[in-house]
Image (cartoon, rainbow, N blue to C red):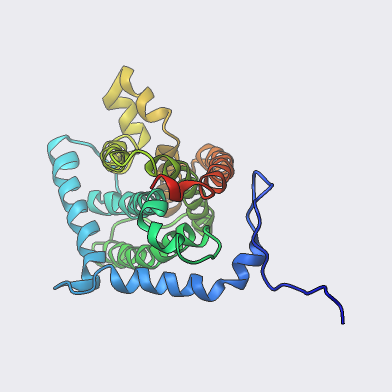
Length: 286
């Protein structure tokens, strides 16, 4: 009788800097699906309005932005209705913000689970990002409804670009950036708890520098010598690229797409390196 035995799983130290074991993640795909369902169902459980918050938040924020930035500040978006312009930017920004927030809290929010059972740790942040696509999809649907309202009922002369399918690529870029930055920050939040507060505060400030409620052209005219704060923000160019796909009267921002994709890949792989290194020792510090 042979003394050798084939093991189903072998847990050993990771020797690679970049270790995204897709085969193992696929083996745990049922757990990934379970996490996604949990994140979708439990977010608004025991709330009065429930999933309606998916709609209320972007709609009310768009109304406020329209009143403050367009009516009071006088930002002109041409033939594009101001409300629709703001709602378009908010859909993508909201997804980026929530994906980054959730990913950056991976170790802190899953410390109890990570300390008891083994599974590929990458599943935890991946489930947050994928479950966020459900909410993002609902908000896209609301955007399409208002888009049709302005086109067919208000007779506004707007239409999507022929490159509209590239929205999938832009969303992929946002996922790469949110996960990359989030995984890097997750390593620091295991040691410095107050960093979580700083991340929330920083994201609120970043929104105003990310061309969510204005175009890059308007920022160039209004900010003058301070325009560099927006110009050097890659997220502003990504949101501008996303918006230009929805409105054919806006010039396609190809540079934002190319640079965003390259930067997203770099950030993701750096984040993966940091994430893999942190998961070995985080349980001693969290």
